[in-house]
Amino acid sequence: GGSSPSVEVDVRIEAVERLPEGAVSCDFARDSFDLRVVHELLGKRYRLVRSCLQHDIDPCRSTFRVKRNHVVLSLAKLRQQPELGLLQGRERHEDYDEDDEVIEIPDEAMETARGCNGS
Image 1 (cartoon, helix red, strand yellow):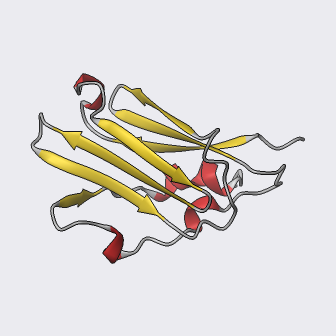
Image 2 (cartoon, rainbow, N blue to C red):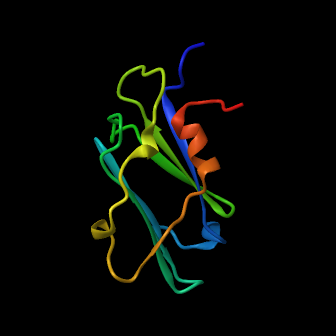
């Protein structure tokens, strides 16, 4: 089968859909993404940074959407890559600020990003 033109990363954040416009932002670069959520309701600043992604993405075509209790990142593949081990990118402590609440992603959330179906 053909591979999907993008990879979705599902990030769970409670009540994120009730935040004001602009509270959720994501900077996409060729080999990284930086998701920030200013969560006034919980008084926290959530952040998820991944750099040195295994495959380059297209920042112009990468997007995110806010759903109930979730932010879904859509990372656009640069070429038709059969597999995309995207999130095997690096997570570095120095990418975060002191008061950032680091978002933990469970392995299941990364399954889609690895492009493997699992058994």
